Length: 333
Image 1 (cartoon, one colour):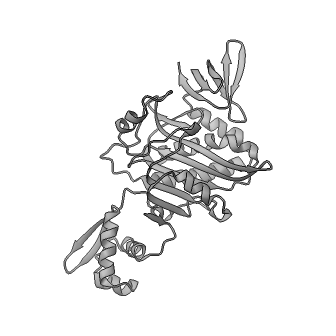
Image 2: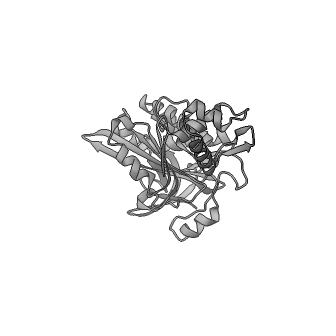
Image 3: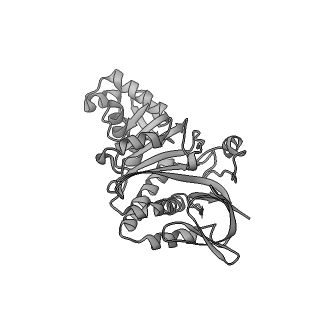
């Protein structure tokens, strides 16, 4: 099932009306009269709204009252009240999809889709870095953001760092959880992976036509379920979940916080503040200063992680040599 933030179906109209009158009961007759929808259709929409996870209290002779919101990251839950100019103002939601990244890449061909967000409850072929599969069960936040940035192509390599800072800030502000950043683009809690991201770029004649930013967040997942499927992978280092199964935290709140932080930090990147972003990333980093082993296409590199270069690469000190690594998987010694 596909829902969008710009739907104006009877279901959305009923839901919006219930939200606007949460302190009172609304009869089917009142809803029918105000929204110009038949009472039978009202009843069907109420049932569907409940199936999406909303809590609706029904009392005879009084009507319906919305008493609780959903745990699903539905598009209107993301865009309603979102304090951004473009990012997230248009959103798409799938119960299940092969990959949000695939759908977003198609959207990216249209400049009018800049800022659009694609969200899925589950992915069957979620994409990770370096062609790996991203395990995407229910309870996680799986999304892609379409961007048509105006900044220079050389800044693409800073986007993963900027995104990681934005997500880390959002997690701390909305959930009160401090995270660490692991080069190049992982977010960790207690040394275990809580989120990651990839970027697909379309570049022509040194100009960025579009960026599609894929983000996977283990919001309320069972770590053991994911670990069973990936623990045999090279460079596996554990799975963390942001909140426990009985948590009442709503994922849409985190998504909104992230999109606000993302838009703000991309504005900084557009204003040539790459070093400021690198400094923010370094303050949150679990990598800098550590002895590391990095798996690259040319083999393993070991040494001490010294700093992030201006292009986002990692500088390693190996005895008396300084080595710059642009792509690889880091493990700590």
